[in-house]
Length: 92
Image 1 (cartoon, rainbow, N blue to C red):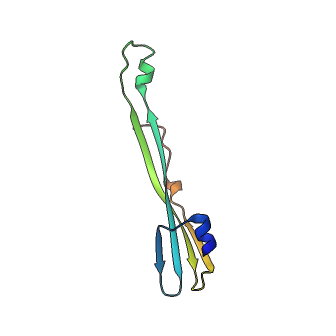
Image 2 (tube, helix red, strand yellow):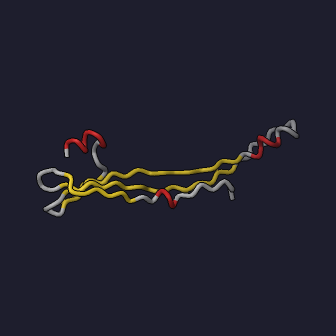
């Protein structure tokens, strides 16, 4: 258990069922696209028009480590949801 805490730090959530302790680490993945057509208009117009459009999506990945009563790792699991987060180059 000490080695996991040293490498990963404190978990965001700890649950226990009396026999096992589960450490849950989560992190968020976000992907976005920003388009500013006002920059293109500067080539043809002396006036700069501040226009921008942003599109994005976010997902959360979870890593769980299960310990027995003695603190020995029994199992670990990844819940990968970030592949569901798609990069969309079209801003609409």
